[in-house]
Length: 327
Ligand code: PBG
Image (cartoon, rainbow, N blue to C red; front, side, top):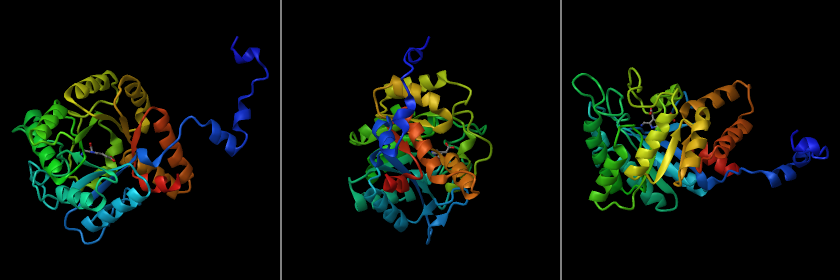
């Protein structure tokens, strides 16, 4: 017999009677400080450019980025994650390592604007910069070359650190990327720059709208480097390796379809765990809400609360500023 069966006086509904009661007993709360806003900055724009598959999200100009970061900071958002979209892409993603590349300029702008008031993070990956859209450089057979890519990542880490970023986010899923990035940072005296490792990153269809956000030309998929959604043990292996290589924080991505993985990661590690509520998760809610099929604001809060409940200490979300203002 269940314990409560022996106590017929137990009525769980008593604790759900009023908003004040529900607030009192809530086990999971959201706080602006744990939200991270991903942002896109595109070279050569004179006006912010809307991203049609992500209504409400734009590719920023350097100016509008500065303003939006200031707004996010004022709302109490804990961090921003910057993605650069260069005018010219090539096979090796040269703009990703150019000290004057759009991301490096944007980091300098933002650091000058908000300083240490908010944690400035940058995506460390080549897909925004390559004309083929892959996260690395290709070998002569067109396959993503792991070790040649690591050399590019090392250089990216150094130019981003030089620009003043606080945290780099290696997201390309190359083997050994965290260790290489750590060494590259230490080599130039950037010991204080932290690594938020995209540790558990699945080859997900939910990244769809992101392609538009960074004008990606990707043909094909990323299944030879990102994880198979069918697998779980893979995530534990990635986690062990990233921690060994020096990850300061780890990330699970996407968020909502992978809450089981998130819970396991959160139970396993003693470093902060981030979850990335990605472009497709955003787009689905916005599209359904625009059709009047779901209550937008409630859905957003429910999804974020679920991600927190599953163990995320931090959440990357395109709604960060809006939600922070609402909290
Ligand atoms: C790689 C990167 C991607 C995202 C963040 N970093 C794209 C990918 O891995 O295919 C996706 C974020 C999103 O969909 O919101 N630079």
